[in-house]
Length: 239
Length: 292
Image (cartoon, rainbow over all chains, first blue to last red):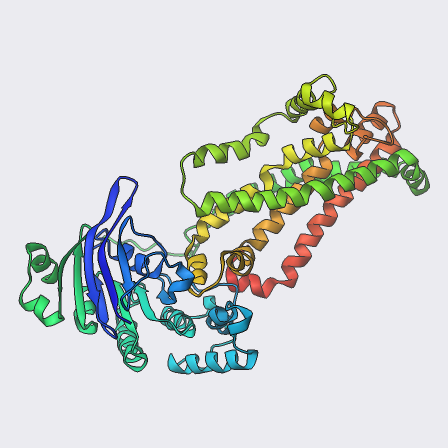
């Protein structure tokens, strides 16, 4: 799905988290929102997911105005920074949650839900953990379960907030490839937030560098690296 | 190397950094046991000893009187009405306070705590002033056959006021610690607000809620001051267990007073046992979710 961000701004009280920003994300792209903390990248992601509403501006999905769509109507697969798995449910129930939450008319049968959850567990290469609770999983496993749970609703896009933030370096590398693979198989438009420029450069098709609520540069990783547009980008990239 | 002196001889056992010296440990354990003994166990035992001073039969006979029966019935009815109301209110208030940011939040929390700092007697007097037969509202209500003071509604109001904070106070820290992420995740998965509440919010707070309800219940059954003021202590009608105990005691009917007191204490013990039983039954879930 093609995502168009049109002059979006957001203020919390008197502080501006986002100055009007515009961004066009082509269908099927894997985009990194890169910036230090406080740059507005997470706010922008949450606006895309419908968890925050912009103070002004519009969001367009495939050319349709989606600004007023509720979080449920967005159908965005969202992976939270600390994964936000439901701690009182098994992994199976976590992944099945979105399907069970559908209105009765469009809810799959129990057998169909079980089949889909099993398939997703295979996709994340953890076929045997359905009966476990989140607290019994490692950080990397939790991240993959969160990804499977987001994919279960057959989302129109995938939004990830610092998906590798809480993991050690080795697991991080593995999961980067995992996300790339899942993106390539599903073809979903994917936006992820990161403060790690190496991660953004390695994984994304398109890097959006942000600072202080503004977009500093949009470009392919190699272009951003070769031709930083502003002093901020040059400095941030060279870190 | 030479500046490190190794003590020769005994130190065979290492102590963990947070462990106290044996003497300090035993002194603290002794102080705790002594404190508990004097403040909790001894009075509890005394109640039962006094109740059974003239034998089981005399004790049971005093409980079989109409006044005692009515008092027990009234107290249970009041708890049955005020506890569910306060549970619902407590969940709503805690949810509102922890999931939204708004002006005057600190003030609202203070307001919820108010019944803890106001003396129950004062609370009772306020209800009498508000709804007594001489007040504007109270006069109208009495004229229309719905008296509040010296009747059941007044007792319920007083009990609810006093037990107002228990559930909310238990829930607020737990809900703050859990944050909003799980609820937000459920919303992005397409769940409605109502569904999120029943499938995510409530299961996550159920132990704190249970604990708050039990505390609220214990206090609702035991409340004396506010109820004494608004109820008028009419025997067989508006006298609850605590007020009846007091009246019996004042009349030197100590077996009757302590027998009723023993029943009240037993009710509290039953709620505690209930909580423990639930905890044991759900121990695996508790371990899995890291909740107390």
